[in-house]
Length: 209
Image (cartoon, rainbow, N blue to C red; front, side):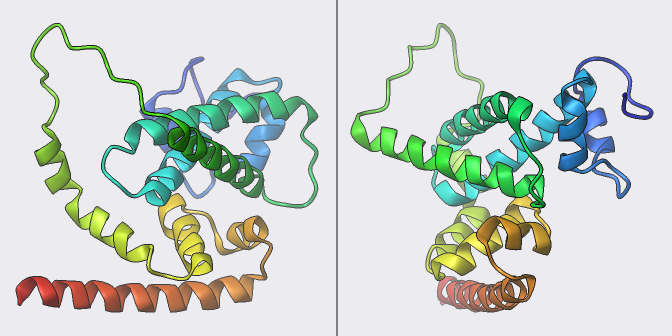
């Protein structure tokens, strides 16, 4: 069974973007098709990878974490591919399944990083045309500030904001992932956003002063 209107075997930015429409297949629907439809599998993995990278970026929240976020996202995709043949629908959103894998893989990566030093990259053969660490730091300053302030929120509020705002999960999906009611998620999200806005305003006031 193919995806209507999809062409080509690979995933292109346009193809992934098309899946973000209101009528786009859900991850659950894509997972059901993935075993027999390579296009569905590719789109599923592209969306899962995007979710995992965004989640890891917020959770890591420091300069130099991009490689770790990409590595974890790759591990998540591999784990999902391995689990698909035996995955059983149990009434929970597929996003909750992906969240469980991602959070575990991130913990594993953080533990591995604490056990030993990071490998040193080989020296480049030519000049590095990539943005300097200073310019990257400036571009990420606003986001980094918000992430730093988020770490001052209670753990539950921080995780809810990460899933709802950064990852883009719905209230129902977030509730299923965290084992909460949708009402409790909405209340915690409101309180977390209120606290975060207050901290950002206070931080900006301090910068002006």
